[in-house]
Figure 1 (spheres, protein in one colour):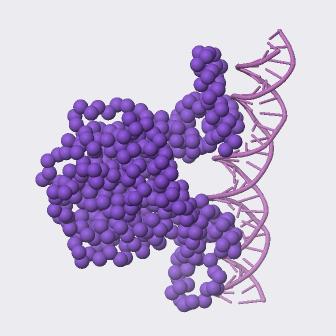
Figure 2 (tube, rainbow over the protein chains, first blue to last red):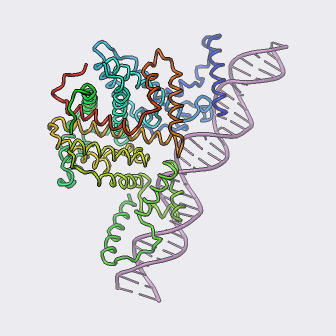
Figure 3 (cartoon, chains in turn yellow, green, red, cyan):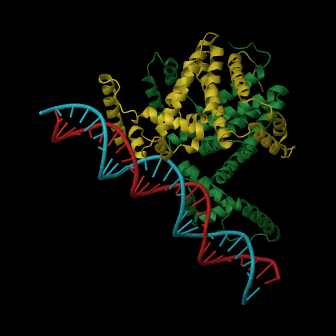
Length: 244
Length: 244
DNA sequence: ATAGTAATTGGAACGTCGTTCCATTCATGT
DNA sequence: ACATGAATGGAACGACGTTCCAATTACTAT
């Protein structure tokens, strides 16, 4: 708490300084941006477990105490890093092709970002109601409205899409944790499929069936297929006979 | 690895002993079951962070070394605890009312279990391709087949449902972490909604709209609505005009 | 310019965790 | 009775997030 107050005061002072004096800071001066940038580098290069304040301090040639002057704790650091990645996705979604298509390209953009930075999936997941999550909700919800989804169904439709996206994001992150660095992906999938075929076919017929499909499947396509499924469901609301 | 081998040997010996001599174990003897049971108690009563080997050892009046004789590591412990909870859900799903309804009641059973034990959501999430996950896949996939979902669409439909369920599970777990114990839920939701209304209405119109709905919404109903949405989408496949 | 004040730094130190190690106890088959 | 190996419990290790603090640096008012 003491930290928070100091933080705020510092921000104000910094802002003021930025207004009055243009650019005189030491080239090696620490700042929240530089710290977040270094954190992203470590996360991307060496994975979630590699991000420690010691590693970060070493990379920035400083001590952990100095980092804590700019960042409240590890959570805030991860949130800032996540916001940075999500922010990039939000910028480039064109609405030319209609709201449905915009939702698809936005979702795919999220997927690609999380695929490239799996730790984003983990954090988006662990800390709900973050700023990044609000952006996602807004991006999707607004377009659902444009799609003509009726008032009462909006909340449910939006949360279904967001929860689905989060689910995939989390799975991606978990897989990345499981197969670190440049492990041979298809080989690993093959191993999993093989272990599935060793299960009792009487008890697990569906899993057996999946095992044959697992090798030649594309995560990205499958993700989009799920989005389309939900969009189709949203479109079908009210006019479709209930599946039972 | 050394541990693993010892483990296996011990299991065999235990099994053999169980076969030859019926019940002579000390009443206070340690066992994997007793350990898992104690772990579940701690997780339920005090939350995910409270489960440490020290706390576990204290509760079982032993040392952490003794626990490691029965359990390889914390991950295995959590997996066993998760399996125990999921196992209960799997048992009581009636298929009388058709596969669609069976999927609904199964999904609701999962939701309720994870709602009651939020840490299950966290772990299901962190470690994919677990035994519990296979059970879930099988339960859903088999019924999708019974529903008449065409061969090519099965994998995608199943993974969409599972990913959605996982997404909700993770959010539930995150919320439970955020509002520990018996925090006043509606008050907390109200606070979140209030913070949302303070955002710029021009930039976040949809979030503003959500804020009004947030207080009187039922997670469980919303979860089921999402399941229905996906099922409707699955039913609509191939005959619906694309939403765009 | 200079002294005084506040921001910022770097690294030592604290407490907690998962895990490993190991001396000791206990039950068993011979 | 004794030898063997399963099982125990607690000390110790290394790594982490975080806090603390003495030293340094940058800025302000004089």
